[in-house]
Amino acid sequence: MNISEKTAAVLEDIERRIDPETEEDFVKQWEDFLYDRFEMDIFTPVRKKINPPATDMEDININDAVEDYDLMLRSELIKVSKSLASKSNSLAVRANYGTGILSSLFGAEIFVMPREQNTLPTTKPFNDTAKIEKMIEKGIPDLNNGFGKKVFEFGELCAETFAKYPKISKYLKVYHPDLQGPLDICELLWGGEMFYAMYDEPELVHSMLSLVTETYTAFLNKWYELFPCDSYMNPHWNTIWHRGKIFLRCDSAMNLSPELYKEFANPYDAVLLERFDGGAMHFCGRGDHYIETLCDTPKLYGINLGQPLHNDMEKIFANSVDKEIKILGFSKKILETLGKREKGYNRSLHVR
Picture 1 (cartoon, rainbow, N blue to C red):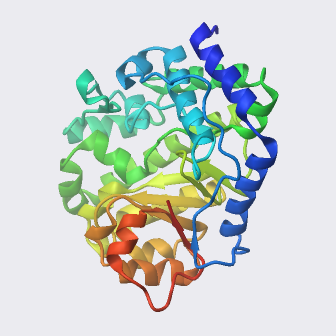
Picture 2: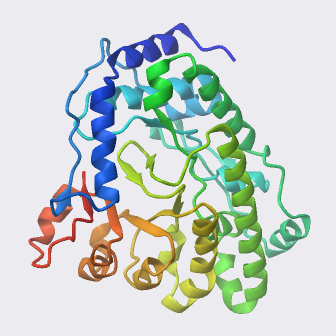
């Protein structure tokens, strides 16, 4: 698969600017934090050497990138270029096709936002329990359905292209695409009817969550055939690293009671954390009502909050940092609004 001259120029600029000593030191800072060799209370990594780009980086609309592998590659590389010129960002890229990757495998209609929004696509829910029953009967879908083909073909382009650049192939990490989490994908497919079904047809909900979990496993295993990684530590976005091989999302859990969370969300997240030797969890909105259950999950090593101020943060801190579960990507501005915590953060809070 060929790349354009513009993309090649960005690659060459990045290859020239990568300083091995700086990158190794930067990753070592993260390693010390994640494995409790960090001495300060709050962690903010600092890149020893900042390397600005030789030329201005263009803005690429995500709608264009989704339709063109070369533009997708360049848009991701521009983030890497900006990271090299930053104090605290990592060198990482992904197949950036939005939250609907896994739901699109099941035939959910892809929804593309208006171009002026410059926002990642997703999928539309079926809002039809009969269709959910048919999905369960059919089992794991073709992993190349929907966005699947694009994700894997983009991954192949990255593997083929980066192999030509020694420093990029060593220091730039390709992390796994956004597959959300079992509950999120179930809601993306089922829509609001899923919440009624938890009361009316709980076994059907469990069957669908099991199918999504098995599909998730198959998809991620296929991805790791392209980009093998160990569970020691991995980047996500350009802002964090975490222990384990998986970074889950459970935004839908904000709508559940603690009891429903224990029944319908946590068991399936726990399966994936076990299968991929641990990882971290992102959630938007409120999560303090189920945070104790979440942080008691085996092999959960970190959490990332989308809207911390929707939560009782003392309850969040007590169940995470006080138990040596890292909080990743916390906002400096929000931390300042919370004021001083007498107990501190147990060397487990990353602030960006």
